[in-house]
Image (cartoon, rainbow over all chains, first blue to last red; front, side):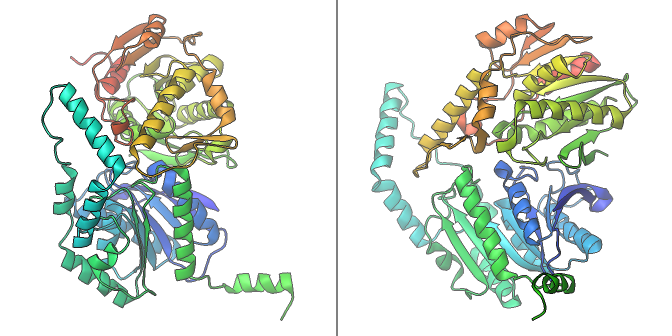
Amino acid sequence: MIERVVTFGAENCLTGIVSEPPVARSASPAVLLVTAGIIHHVGPYRLYVDLARKLAPAGFLTLRFDVSGVGDSQPRPDPLTDAEAPLADIREAMDFLQGRYGTCEFVLLGLCSGAYQAHEVAVRDTRVVGTVQLDGYGYRTVGHYLHQLVQKYLSPRRWTKFLLRKKKERSAGNWNPRPEDPRLEIYAEAFPPRPKVKKEIHGLAARGVRMLFIYSGGVPEYFNHRRQFVAMFGRLPAAAVAMEYFEWADHTYAWSPDREMLVERIADWLHEGFPSVMTPAIAAAAVVATGPV
Amino acid sequence: MNVPAFFGSSQHPLYGVYHPPTSRRLGSTGVLICGPIGLESLRSHWMLRRLADQLASKGIPAFRFDYSGTGDSWGHLRDASLGRWLLDVETAAEELLDSAGVRKLSAIGLRFGAVLAAEAARMVVPLEHLVLLDPVVTGRRYLHELRTLRDEKLARWKKQRGPCVKGDEEEILGFNFPRRLIREIEALDLRGELPKVKGKVALYSSYEDQEIVELGAQCDVFQLLDDATDWDRVEEAERALLAAALPRAAIEMFTGPKK
């Protein structure tokens, strides 16, 4: 495997690292790892480095890069909005790989805001043949509220913490209740309407885009049980869509066993969804090695 | 435009970013930026990029990089060692000298990067100035703080986790440190003997404790600053470091105070 630092995009404002496979897998899509928030291209706890160095030796050309203004990338020279800029960045990343390596199909992988961007670009660009969305869009359903109630009111551990906190507040003379987590309102407002996203996911499935959705236990404010996925987006063809709920993992996969499991799952999904096709060179080498059939 | 690149040997490539001056060059000194390790490195990436940009805007070439087994550099943390990282600092120093065409070097070290910059200066890299920002003073105390944060984070997470010590590695805030490296870190004490530099050794700290005060007494410049770092708060452990006073003080070390 060879890694190369690359700059590309408008006025070469974008920086990334391409991990080149030692042997090309014919007709395999390239994998783009989209940054999350303001974490730079190594990913949370070096997750994207681990992914790239797992996928490239397996034959997948992989690019991890910083969207404009984040990490080692410069701000864009054009006046795009904060919402439009990362989508343009991702498309320019695809343009770059297409121009440099001839790849014309892509799998976009993103965590959190990277997942939302992966979805949005997939909807707009038919070169995207797959997405891996880690803690992507989520919407509270009736089931979500019920699970929340059960977890909140039937958990001995939560009651213990609640009572200890109240005792501490009373001792300190503080009778104010803990304020509601402000992130809840941000999540409720930042996601597009559920019917729109549902329609888009179904449209992507109909277009033949393969999708892997992985939710962690770190976003209980909008996803908290496995069946919630179907409640949010309806039934989708199993050939197109896979879903995992890693309830024990936190949002950024802070613990290494969780990251290892995540990397393995993603690699397995890619191998299943985009099986290797031997190039003539590889086939010839195989004949030499094993003898003609 | 900044220049990101792999450098060093092709067997063990390191990732770094050279920030060329964007205004009239100020003097003939380049500044090597030695960042933290582990989770602190992710927190501080943005701040150090901004620091390098600001140095470059003042006419001072700057270089920041990832140590072996971290960031985009080759290898795994499990293969890292103090000796390896000191070699990396030396390699990065050579890269800056080549890239910038300067004859002299200074270094800014943040947290564990301060230890590496100081050790490298003592052993292999002659420096004009050495700036220590919130330095790790003793490895023992540093590891204790990281383990405390880790244990607090574990206690807050509602799911059961496995052991943090597995075989020859210990997981500390998401990173698997080899025991060999942990022993090396435990033995470190920056108060032992600061390197001799041609200019000044400056210490700027956002927190005050006995170790910092003792180290500060050995420096040419010692200043406590009010800044948003919160290294010991688990709520901040995954949040970007938005410190302003520390980088400003570091820059003024090279440019003089802002008029």
